[in-house]
Image 1: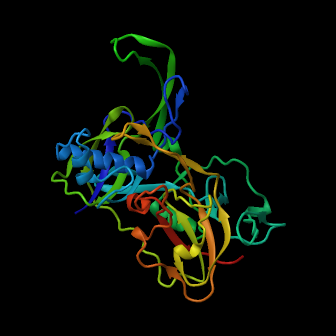
Image 2: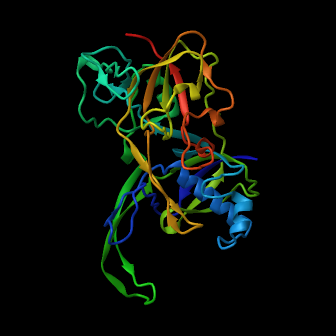
Image 3: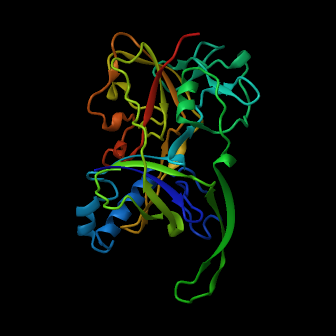
Length: 363
């Protein structure tokens, strides 16, 4: 059964990044919004266990119901995405593409690659890739134009049209709070030197998270979820969402891949070979991305920290050319472009590597 749900906070939320955190080892816990797909799959699977009244201590029952920390069984998930639900209308928000540059005081638009100067030296087999050309030939510094686009505005931006991004504070606020670790065997007694600071997310009114998933049959169209850090609550309700864009067959001769969620590649910013995902003669032409994101997590069932890995961030854009008919390979889970790691079940099943593919034109 497929479900599409919108989740609003009961209070504030804490979704930590992939950096291990314990009072005393690091004093500040940074919060992300939206959380990574591996966080959301944990929330969804934990709620499934609650619905079936299965405690974590019964590991065989847990495995039978929802799988393990590296095997997701029948779960298929897309999201979570920042969303606003008001008066029965759902709007989803995505990171501004990494290749977007300012074109007016409050608007940006996507660029297109061409040779500028000597190009960029990379670990790619071509060694040097074209440098993206920016407005007036000048690469902008740190921008303050907003970080989010609605789904429709994202399509316009990827098509090369000017759009106005939405700022963080129009969707959510960050709140920092101090805490101190308590002695496990002595109530109300604090530990010396265990002061820490946690950053919480407070979504604006009508703002929350949108998630699509299948594999579990939830009888109720609404209810409460235990949401990640500190078990803060979230109210969910079923909503009508738009279908995800299906890539063209064949793909355009020049096409770009926008990553709507983080992706893992064995070679850091790229896979060992793009032929894992594409059929036909496909050549990488340019890349726009901002660093990397470290994603880890905590294995609640085994009470231990998971290994952390570097991912390509959501919002990254990869430019390709194809020589002859090319397409995404059949059989890719959710048409995702990502590799898996460390004996994990295909992480595309839980929403990593979700892409939107558009045509681009040479300058």
